[in-house]
Length: 470
Image (cartoon, rainbow, N blue to C red; front, side, top):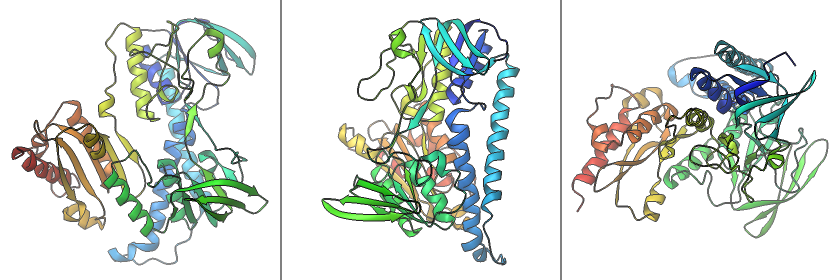
């Protein structure tokens, strides 16, 4: 371990999107800060084996799919399109390396001490770091825990890294699976399933619930499933895996399909049923940091402080959606609270994105949630088939949906399934952050022709409803 200071204002355990962003903000506020990361590369799960490599492969696989199926529609005649998976993976790895290198430069440029090693709490103000050169004990006025999460597997589906894999291994297959089974119809399973389906795999998604992506607005979720059905992804809904036998060539699954016995054979099985806080060997018990008995999340107050006054926690370690941008904003807020500033995160305006194609993006309440809460509401909706830019691109699937309080016209939620939804949602997040009405969006000039015009049209539709609501 390189020689560093032994006493700090703030020690951050974890160099992912929560930890490194918090470290930069702490440095800006004048805190002497150290960021401890167990792996050689900074960036955490997101940059190394999550958000970034998956999006690199999603983009590459989409180009491959377009070249094979859609170029001819645009008058582009090409020869036989072949897949060079090794080059595709090398490009993905370079994207990851470039970004993680930039994170290190960012921290070093902000005078943050970057320390590689395994860290654990050994006191309310002390952290022990085990590195290549042995163990060192560091002290700090405050400690921020930002170690993220790890994939979980149901009983009988233990990861072996070869046949039964987590998302990490599914981002680095050395060959396209003939048949990829996916346990879990959430965003991770659908994104990775989409990658390998485009590259030639037969893909079967096994989901125990009656709907995929259950946190999405119901209309959006149903539309997404119909589109993925057309793309050739097979779904086994209301189906549970009851057993698995693995040999050198395949995985043989026993299934309970809504009370009936069934089976499935695949050569790779991706288990994507969820993630859990990464707290093992962190030393929480040694210092008395309390966790939720059921979920394992660390319990924090509105300032992200645990029951131990000098120790804070953010990101996947605490309750809420496991999103990189959530962790980043919580990291900033936690550090500002330490400094006596009013740091906070508006969870009512927290966007979420599913990077299938078409993309799905949402913020705020779904139609089901406003019904459950008995909030008077209106819906404004507009299909991308009516947007000139979408027609030009040949991507007309999907729609924009706004959920609006009918008596005040205030936007309660926005849900988009369609091209560039991941970018379009930012306007909706900003609108909700400022308490905007549908009229505000409807009266804002949108460029023509753009995808965002569909949002303006949806706002106009909602406005008509709310104006004349009784």
